[in-house]
Image 1: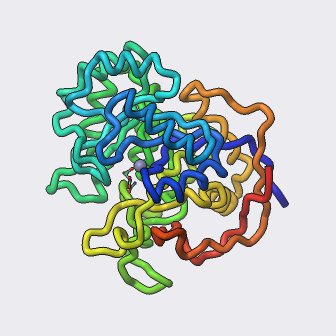
Image 2: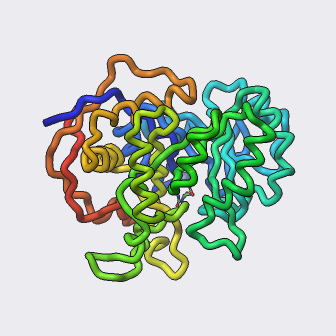
Length: 342
Ligand code: NCD
Ligand code: ZN
């Protein structure tokens, strides 16, 4: 049994810099023909110039079609948005709420301050990519996405109905519902959120224990939420598409008293997505989700004759990679799908 699909598109990817970039960039380039690269570096990528120089840096490491997201800050100018709109390598702006996740120290604390920027983006049809979580200490961490939708996103969509919004890495029933009921809102879905629920953060080798390698943001939710995400991802609705949110951190930053958020799926994202779709008897929907719907949303060319082949074969996920001791998601486990050729 094998699966022949058009070269896929990753709509949400962290590639970093330095040794980590050298390690992970070729892996994603081997899996995906097009990727959207996240701007949460240190310092963050807040300008078109910086995004283009980072893109050139990545091209030196591995060949791939890199589409760059720029970090929206309270200091972003309307003039920058005009520049971004004209640049074919810029895909849109990424909104991080202040302190919501890794590298969000330059994020937005007062959303109203960036409303004039949304107005410009709406007019120029520049997409907004949203990390949809509030960070108030009185809101339960498992409710952050739901409350963001209620308190922040609903107002943005009402004020800027034509603004093209991607709600990134959705994790909840409420997010699926919001996407379904708002015309200009779409969503990316990770492989890990299709494969684990929040119990996995508290399970190691079937024992109850803290598992930092399953901790990412937004944090995984309940089994009910996971089932609703799978239903959305496999529904054939073009509003839902793949974005891995592969987020590599060295082992020392994961197994730590201050453990970073992020699951690394860059090595084996396609195998993981295939595993999830196969479990639910929906392999026939995988190509649209991986290769068509995301590109349609962003107006990217759909490859006509470039394929990748997944075989129904055992694939043991390595425990660690490179000098960074990078631990892949589901390390040590065996999947039944494996890339076997073009
Ligand atoms: C991401 C990272 O490490 O850059 N971490 C994560 O848990 N997903 C940031 C992000 O997308 O939230
Ligand atoms: Zn991310």
